[in-house]
Amino acid sequence: ICLGMQLTLVEYARNVLGLEDANSTEFDENTKNPMVYLIDNFLDQSGDSQLRTHQSPMGGTLRLGEYPCDTKEGSLIRKAYNGEKTILERHRHRYEANPTYREALEKAGMIVTGESNGLIETVEVEGHPWFLGVQFHPESILTEDGHEMLNNFLKGKN
Image 1: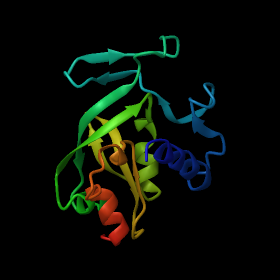
Image 2: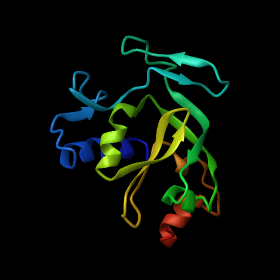
Image 3: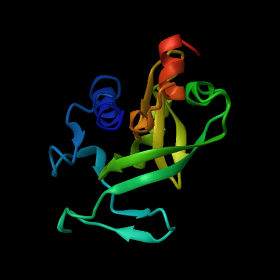
Image 4: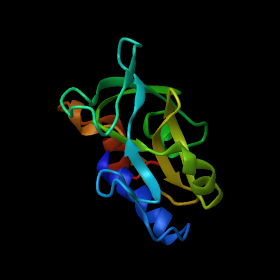
Protein backbone atom coordinates (compact mmCIF):
# COMPACT_ATOMS: atom_id res chain seq x y z
CA ILE A 1 0.00 0.00 0.00
CA CYS A 2 1.39 3.40 -1.12
CA LEU A 3 4.99 3.57 0.19
CA GLY A 4 5.03 -0.24 0.26
CA MET A 5 4.37 -0.34 -3.49
CA GLN A 6 7.00 2.33 -4.06
CA LEU A 7 9.63 0.38 -2.11
CA THR A 8 8.61 -2.78 -3.97
CA LEU A 9 9.52 -1.03 -7.22
CA VAL A 10 12.89 0.05 -5.82
CA GLU A 11 13.74 -3.45 -4.56
CA TYR A 12 12.56 -5.13 -7.76
CA ALA A 13 14.73 -2.75 -9.77
CA ARG A 14 17.75 -3.46 -7.56
CA ASN A 15 17.37 -7.23 -7.28
CA VAL A 16 15.72 -8.24 -10.56
CA LEU A 17 16.69 -5.50 -13.03
CA GLY A 18 20.19 -5.20 -11.53
CA LEU A 19 19.94 -1.44 -10.97
CA GLU A 20 21.90 -1.36 -7.71
CA ASP A 21 21.49 2.40 -7.32
CA ALA A 22 17.71 2.42 -7.88
CA ASN A 23 15.89 4.52 -5.32
CA SER A 24 13.10 6.98 -4.69
CA THR A 25 13.82 10.69 -5.01
CA GLU A 26 12.09 11.02 -1.64
CA PHE A 27 15.19 9.38 -0.12
CA ASP A 28 17.85 10.34 -2.68
CA GLU A 29 17.07 13.32 -4.93
CA ASN A 30 20.15 12.55 -7.05
CA THR A 31 19.56 8.85 -7.66
CA LYS A 32 20.57 7.80 -11.18
CA ASN A 33 17.62 5.39 -11.35
CA PRO A 34 14.58 7.10 -9.82
CA MET A 35 11.99 4.32 -9.69
CA VAL A 36 9.77 6.66 -7.69
CA TYR A 37 9.78 10.42 -8.13
CA LEU A 38 8.01 13.56 -6.96
CA ILE A 39 4.88 13.80 -9.04
CA ASP A 40 5.36 16.96 -11.06
CA ASN A 41 2.23 17.09 -13.22
CA PHE A 42 -1.11 15.47 -12.53
CA LEU A 43 -4.82 16.11 -12.86
CA ASP A 44 -6.56 16.91 -9.61
CA GLN A 45 -10.09 15.79 -8.72
CA SER A 46 -11.62 18.67 -10.68
CA GLY A 47 -9.56 17.80 -13.78
CA ASP A 48 -7.19 20.77 -13.44
CA SER A 49 -3.49 20.23 -14.13
CA GLN A 50 -1.28 20.57 -11.05
CA LEU A 51 2.43 21.34 -11.52
CA ARG A 52 5.07 20.68 -8.83
CA THR A 53 8.86 20.75 -8.49
CA HIS A 54 11.29 19.92 -5.69
CA GLN A 55 11.44 23.68 -5.06
CA SER A 56 7.65 23.99 -4.62
CA PRO A 57 6.42 24.50 -1.07
CA MET A 58 5.46 21.05 0.25
CA GLY A 59 2.13 22.27 1.62
CA GLY A 60 -0.68 21.55 -0.81
CA THR A 61 1.44 19.29 -3.02
CA LEU A 62 -0.33 16.00 -2.32
CA ARG A 63 -2.29 13.98 -4.81
CA LEU A 64 -5.17 13.80 -2.40
CA GLY A 65 -8.65 12.31 -2.57
CA GLU A 66 -10.53 9.74 -4.60
CA TYR A 67 -9.36 8.91 -8.13
CA PRO A 68 -10.40 6.29 -10.68
CA CYS A 69 -8.11 3.38 -11.53
CA ASP A 70 -8.59 1.32 -14.68
CA THR A 71 -7.75 -2.32 -14.02
CA LYS A 72 -6.29 -4.82 -16.48
CA GLU A 73 -8.33 -7.78 -17.71
CA GLY A 74 -7.35 -11.00 -15.92
CA SER A 75 -5.40 -9.20 -13.18
CA LEU A 76 -5.43 -9.88 -9.45
CA ILE A 77 -6.60 -6.34 -8.80
CA ARG A 78 -9.63 -6.81 -11.04
CA LYS A 79 -10.41 -10.13 -9.36
CA ALA A 80 -9.98 -8.52 -5.93
CA TYR A 81 -12.65 -5.99 -6.91
CA ASN A 82 -15.01 -8.68 -8.20
CA GLY A 83 -14.40 -7.93 -11.88
CA GLU A 84 -14.71 -4.15 -11.78
CA LYS A 85 -12.97 -2.54 -14.77
CA THR A 86 -12.70 0.86 -13.06
CA ILE A 87 -12.36 1.25 -9.31
CA LEU A 88 -12.31 4.37 -7.15
CA GLU A 89 -9.73 4.65 -4.38
CA ARG A 90 -8.33 7.30 -2.08
CA HIS A 91 -4.85 8.78 -2.43
CA ARG A 92 -2.56 10.74 -0.15
CA HIS A 93 0.95 11.02 -1.56
CA ARG A 94 3.48 13.21 -3.39
CA TYR A 95 5.58 10.51 -5.02
CA GLU A 96 4.66 8.23 -7.92
CA ALA A 97 6.04 5.27 -9.80
CA ASN A 98 8.28 6.45 -12.64
CA PRO A 99 6.71 5.32 -15.95
CA THR A 100 10.13 5.50 -17.65
CA TYR A 101 10.90 2.07 -16.17
CA ARG A 102 7.59 0.43 -17.03
CA GLU A 103 8.81 -1.50 -20.08
CA ALA A 104 11.87 -2.87 -18.25
CA LEU A 105 9.77 -3.88 -15.24
CA GLU A 106 7.19 -5.62 -17.40
CA LYS A 107 9.85 -7.51 -19.37
CA ALA A 108 11.18 -8.73 -16.00
CA GLY A 109 7.77 -9.90 -14.79
CA MET A 110 6.39 -6.97 -12.80
CA ILE A 111 3.23 -5.99 -14.65
CA VAL A 112 1.31 -2.72 -14.39
CA THR A 113 -2.30 -3.77 -13.84
CA GLY A 114 -3.93 -0.49 -12.83
CA GLU A 115 -3.60 3.04 -14.21
CA SER A 116 -5.11 6.48 -13.78
CA ASN A 117 -4.45 9.14 -16.43
CA GLY A 118 -1.10 7.55 -17.26
CA LEU A 119 -0.06 7.11 -13.61
CA ILE A 120 0.88 3.63 -12.41
CA GLU A 121 -1.61 2.65 -9.69
CA THR A 122 -1.13 -1.11 -9.25
CA VAL A 123 1.60 -3.66 -10.01
CA GLU A 124 1.69 -7.44 -9.82
CA VAL A 125 4.38 -10.07 -10.24
CA GLU A 126 3.47 -12.29 -13.16
CA GLY A 127 2.64 -15.83 -12.08
CA HIS A 128 2.65 -15.07 -8.35
CA PRO A 129 -0.55 -16.19 -6.59
CA TRP A 130 -0.97 -12.89 -4.72
CA PHE A 131 1.66 -10.21 -5.18
CA LEU A 132 -0.14 -6.92 -5.50
CA GLY A 133 1.20 -3.43 -4.89
CA VAL A 134 -1.19 -0.46 -4.84
CA GLN A 135 -0.43 3.27 -4.82
CA PHE A 136 -3.72 4.13 -3.13
CA HIS A 137 -5.05 3.58 0.40
CA PRO A 138 -7.80 0.93 0.44
CA GLU A 139 -7.70 0.89 4.24
CA SER A 140 -8.89 4.50 4.40
CA ILE A 141 -12.51 3.61 3.63
CA LEU A 142 -12.98 0.46 5.66
CA THR A 143 -16.50 -0.28 6.79
CA GLU A 144 -17.76 -2.77 9.35
CA ASP A 145 -17.75 -5.29 6.49
CA GLY A 146 -14.16 -4.49 5.57
CA HIS A 147 -12.85 -3.36 2.23
CA GLU A 148 -13.40 -5.52 -0.83
CA MET A 149 -9.73 -5.80 -1.83
CA LEU A 150 -8.55 -6.50 1.71
CA ASN A 151 -11.35 -9.01 2.34
CA ASN A 152 -10.55 -10.84 -0.88
CA PHE A 153 -6.84 -10.86 0.01
CA LEU A 154 -7.61 -12.42 3.38
CA LYS A 155 -9.83 -15.01 1.70
CA GLY A 156 -7.00 -15.85 -0.71
CA LYS A 157 -9.13 -14.93 -3.70
CA ASN A 158 -7.15 -15.01 -6.93
